[in-house]
Length: 165
Image (cartoon, rainbow, N blue to C red; front, side, top):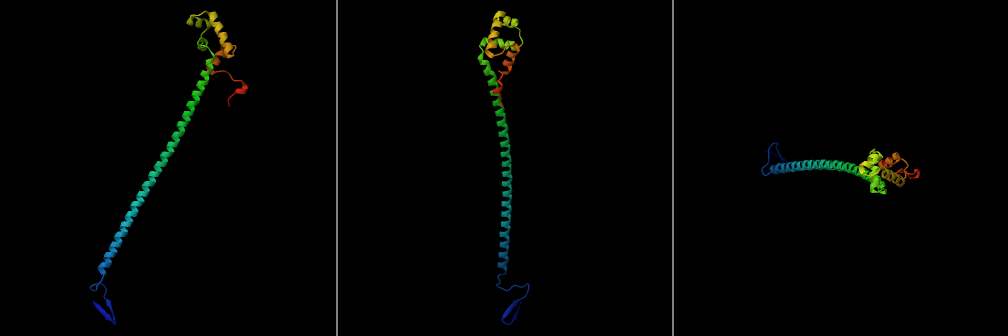
């Protein structure tokens, strides 16, 4: 129903004029809402993807931190192993100053054997053992059996000015 007022026509509420674009406007509004809904869903998907990426980055950083800690532990263990190897090499190096026979006799002395027992085991005379022991003492710079055993087990004593710090 139309009411004419002067040169203008006024449309009654709830009524549509024939040929009006009312359907087009509602279709356009629907399309706009659908596009907006798509945009919202796309934004939600992007936010979810960003959150997954952030969690993955956090896991990667945590793994990197674990790797760094493990590398540090491995390096410390390698250093301890190297120190032990150097220490063993140093201890063994001092034994190189003795002949094979002298080292054999010194080893038996370090095990607590007497000169007589050493002579029996090696099928040598006691005097040969005593003579060899004197040669060992001279070569390693000690004057007693106790000092010789200490030298054998711990290495040579260092002069006070040669201490390691």
